[in-house]
Amino acid sequence: MKTNRVLIALMCVAVFVAAAAGCRNVGRTVGRSMSRQDSMGDAPAKLKLATTTSTENSGLLDYLLPAFEKKYNAKVQVLSMGTGKALQAARDGNVDVILVHDKAAELVFVAEGWGAERRQVMYNDFLIAGPESDPAGIAGMQDASDAMALIAAAQAPFVSRGDDSGTHRQELRLWQEAQIAPSGAWYMEIGQGMEDALRMANEKGAYVLTDRGTHLAIRKGLNLIPLVQGDPALFNLYGVIAVNPEKHHDVTINSELAQKFVDWIMSPEAQKLIESYTVDGEILFHPMADEPVK
Image 1 (cartoon, rainbow, N blue to C red):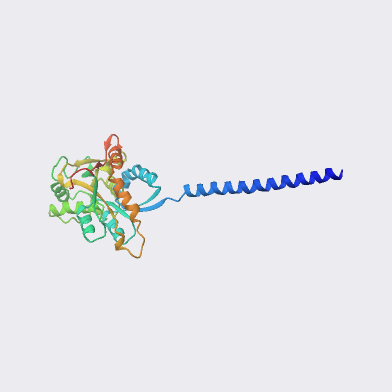
Image 2 (cartoon, rainbow, N blue to C red):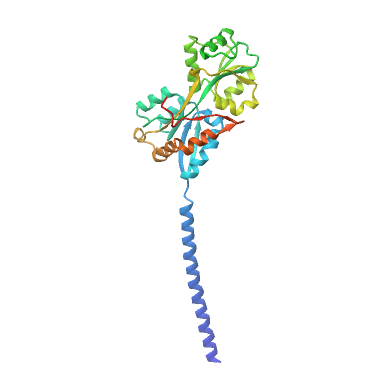
């Protein structure tokens, strides 16, 4: 009996030791698995993009950015604002890259050293939209500045974005060409983005200068129709610029990811995506990377 008790005790000790070893091995296996999961689950890199309201209001960014984010394990924070404010945000070091549409201002930005290079990405055009009643009688005109002069002469309601955006700057150039300084109750500066300006014009039965992309994207909710289009002065070109980190020693610019974004949006992959984005079968933006520099 004593011998049997000793054998049983030894067997219990052996089982305990084997179980303990097994637990240690399981612990090591789980540890390695968790490490692999941690490495595979790295947090996405963050990219801050300042861009015009037209690229967001039109729905283009929602269509375009997921492909970039997936390819580079990135998360793009979009700051939608007028071109003037986007350029200033870049000068202040608050963003990594900009996608805007005022070539003259963009070239100044680069010349001052705030960005390394301006690349042309895509284009669409501006148009003057208004109510079907067309109180100023501008429908079908080929010269946009002449149409603006008729609107002013009739003191027909006109909604201006008034936000130093690329669209607002283009509007001001048309008034300047028409030699008119608009003022009075008929001229409404609202300091808001393109979609808000279109909805205000719709509410007021007013004229408005808009980019075609945003108008196409939300036109089903509007009683505004294109009245003046096709003037070469209404060409609307978009450029992308990575912010120069050398101008910002007090803040961190994600210049590596910004350059990846520039290279990606100029790539055939992204250019095809831009061209494939349509509303009711109409292309909102046309790829421009392979075209001669405008």
